[in-house]
Length: 194
Ligand SMILES: CC(C)(COP(=O)(O)OP(=O)(O)OC[C@H]1O[C@@H](n2cnc3c(N)ncnc32)[C@H](O)[C@@H]1OP(=O)(O)O)[C@@H](O)C(=O)NCCC(=O)NCCS
Image (cartoon, rainbow, N blue to C red; front, side, top):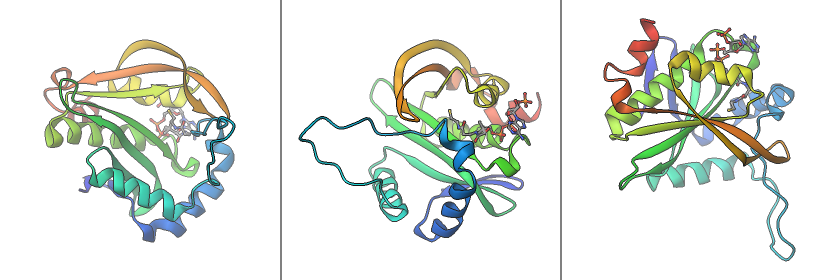
């Protein structure tokens, strides 16, 4: 599945993106650290391995995608890999919901690329997959990320205390959400014609 709006694209992450992904991750280490998911210390006696390699990460993401639980995209701008957007936690039944997480290379931040990518992914979730609700959880101190969802018109639903383990500790998160009936015209169209 590939999604595109002009020079902005989303396509499934691949093993052969390794070099570009690692290069972008290395250059953006400081830029991303405060917002990066971490794993809490494990209880005594439970054995875990080291941080997964790129190959292990992609294998896991593609396995989750094959099971229908995730859409792991890389973000491209003028055909270059500039970030990642992951639709995760896809849940059906009476919920029909998913969450979205993302990051972009600092070198191309501030051009409205991520709002466009989130709009593309959200429209695909609503109209391609048939999901009903998309959620984005953001640390209160992450002003740029809050601007992404606020510009797109996601509703603020309040705070989840100590919700996710980010940058080495449990962090409070603001919840933003959108349901399909709130954007009958499509989120990308609404974003483009705002
Ligand atoms: C959050 C993030 C994805 C935004 O992507 P983006 O493509 O830059 O989004 P936008 O262009 O819409 O900019 C969003 C806001 O970032 C800020 N911004 C603009 N240029 C910027 C720059 N060069 N550097 C940093 N922030 C900038 C502005 O506040 C902007 O809001 P505005 O449009 O009202 O001025 C990006 O900042 C990022 O990857 N941050 C680090 C990882 C992260 O926070 N991930 C999300 C975790 S919930």
